[in-house]
Length: 421
Image (cartoon, rainbow, N blue to C red):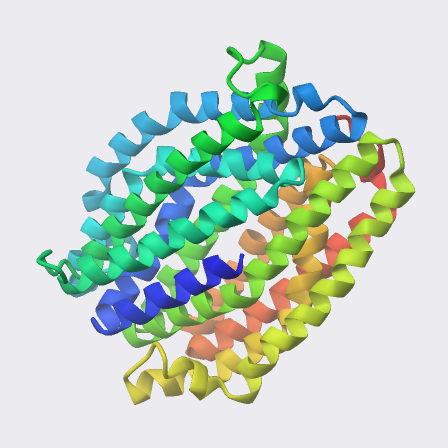
């Protein structure tokens, strides 16, 4: 997950040299892409939960069967969806932001990214499998290669190096798409080497396997869809405040990933440990694993969040080159650093619930808190009442603290212990 952090920060820093409009275009495009591919990304959770449960039961020869089902679903759905989106992006993007400079740079960037959705879906299916069977080192090594490729391709295509044209924000989109394809190729080769004896591509998955995967994955996919749509809506709300605020928000969200992605890595580990413990029939062990991982996550977030509130300008200066935009981002960055501890708590327990197969309850909680509470309040406080980005970010912190509290309550109640996967 640290490699993902490095990629996000380097990507943002490179695009930052192109100005506020390019930063805003890439930021909106990235979250729109997240929304477009969200349903497919839910497959990762289903594959991980099923693979971990099979390993806990001792059925090692069946651990890759959920991966087969996940890849089949991706190949059937993603190509048609990508092609449709490619032609719809020019019509949809202006609804996300009305600034002509942002639209001109954002449309080709997003078009390049949507063409790689099938490979993104495949990569997430493999991610679920590698994490579910304790082979996350393969996931890590592939990500390092992908992100290194992305950084090199960014440098070449954004700035026009080594004889390539300088494509700006569009180059960043093409570079990300190509690195995703590289990752898929590596995952397939690793699948034949490390998962063949566990059923990898030994034929088409059964109807029962596909149905089980859909049952587990669909709620998480819907959750991801609403979360991504919510982030896109948040960027639209911030865009009503101003383009400088939008550029500042894009940087802050990417910096936030420096802290969130290690928490996500810990959450994925907890999901695997919980799933394997439940496969062994040891619910008490599963319950304890989540709290043990939370302790590590809280310490990690304390270390990563402290610079955000102590020296925000030092962080922001690496991505923003307009003093006025840095001024806008300073206090929101401090607030974000203070709330990182609660992000760790919420992220680990949410993934623990997903690992136990409690995907439906997680979906309801996340959608309700984001769409019924946070977004309406953000619109009221930001554009309507005029409290700007600072007011929106205070609400963002309160929303994430509340979500962490709800997931803690659900974990303590223990209703997840009786779910069959």
